Every structure is written in C-alpha cells, then in structure tokens.
Image (cartoon, rainbow, N blue to C red; front, top):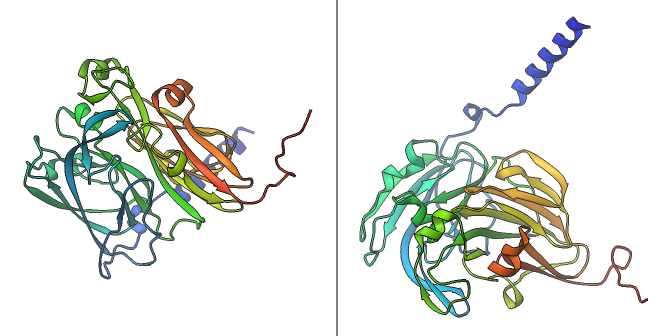
Length: 336
C-alpha cells in the first residue's frame, strides 16, 4: 500500500508538472505594431482580434484634478488619464508593450507606475519616475495571462494610491478570452478625507485616518454610486455579462457580491484558475477578479462590497440594469 501511495504521488506530481505554466513556450515573435485602445471605467476595450504577438504602444498621462467623490463633495484626485480608476489596458500574452508615462505640466509632484503584469524591477516604477511636465518610457513583455492591477509607487506610496492612482491591465491568453455578450470594468477604492462622509465642499486627504484604516468613502469607480440609476450597467435577459474587477485599496479587502445573482465563473484573483457557482468572492488590495454571469431575469441588480456598511453607508454600490421579458419559471412574486 505504501508503494502504491508513493507511486500515486509521483504520478500526480508528474501530471501537475506537465500542466504547470511555462512562459518559455509562448509565441514571442513580433509580427507588427498596434496602438492599444484605452477606455475609462466602466467601459472595456474590445476583445483583441490579432492572433500573433505585436508591439503594443500604450501612453497614459497623469493628471491631478478636482472631481466629485459624492454629489456635494469634491476631492483632489491624482489620476492615470483623468479618471478614477485609470485607463483599462488590454494586451495579449507574448506582446511587447511599449509604455510611455507623461506627467502633466501642472502636476504638483512626481509620479510613476508599477504594473503588476511586469516581470522586472519595481514593475516599471524605477523606469517611469517622472517629474511634472516630463515623460518616461520603457518596454516589457506580457508573459503571463491574467487581470493585473497597476498603481503609482512614488513615495509616499500610500498617499498616491489613496488619491486614486490605480487601474487594470488585462493580458489575454494567446487563445483569447471566452466570448461573452457584455464586458464592464469596476474598481473599488477607499478614501480618507478631513471631513466626515458627506461633508460638503472640497475635502483634503487625511493621512491619520488612512494609517488607522478609517475610510470615509468606499466606492466603485471613484465616486459614490458612480454606476447606479441612469449610469447603471445595461444588459438584456439571456446575455452573459463579464465584470473585470479590481481593488486599488489602499487598505480594504473587498467582499464582492451581486445581489440576486450567482457567479457562473470566477477567475480566482484574476488568474487562470476558475471556481464556479460562487455567491461572493474576495478581491485583495492590489488584486483583481473576473466574474461571469448569465442574466436570466429582468430587474436592477445591486453590486456591492458585502462588508455591508461600506455599501449602503460609504458608497460601494453599483448596479446592473437588465431589460427583457419576465421568466416566472425562475422568479416571480406571489400574492398572499
């Protein structure tokens, strides 16, 4: 029995080794040059149609600007591209990414970028240290597929991230992502202001609250209820919806949940491993997830951080608005 057990373990190890990821086997021969389509949340760039590696040019400008964090509250955000979160970048495994970071002339401080998709020192942070009015450039090979966070890593790092300096880059596997009908981009962040939640006017960053992890706001896409009501994410009954979800933090882990839906597929922490039939999935700070759902009945579906006071008291609510015919075989309200 011991011999059989050892043989079984050896066989399992061989099987695991044969199926483990080896980025030395990917196609890296560049066959042309393209400029990446970049989008602001909640939009996602179109799925890639090319099937061989390209040199992909990506350019993002850091812009420091005052925007609303709530209806009556403003905040000075530091952004990758003028919005929070930053631009969604979509490339393919094997691509050579040629990245340029610009820092707007009216910025008050230097910035850089750390791509979690990069294999190299600082994720590119050292190569992109950029003073106001200047630009920097570096290249990296997209070796491993997945959904990756990027963020500023200029000191004090926590402050730069807390001001909204994060976004997502998707590295599609060489065979592409499975097709769905709709794709959207959501990214959670926690914010720390001198005034309490809802205080009117322009609010400054509060470092003491940030260190204590006492968030005044926890939001999707940079603003309280940014994707609700008229800005809800549209879908139709029968459509499959994929959410690319990131968590910029800087402090709080997300318990990501869609009320009234079950995730058919969850790409765990944005990688290649999948779980199925999931109610709530964790999204670590500096991490991500990809979730797929089939919308089977109409209605408004609230998307929340299920640490529930964050949702209904601090702003972490989005919505998916599904139109179409009722399906009473799945859901119907009964009279008493």
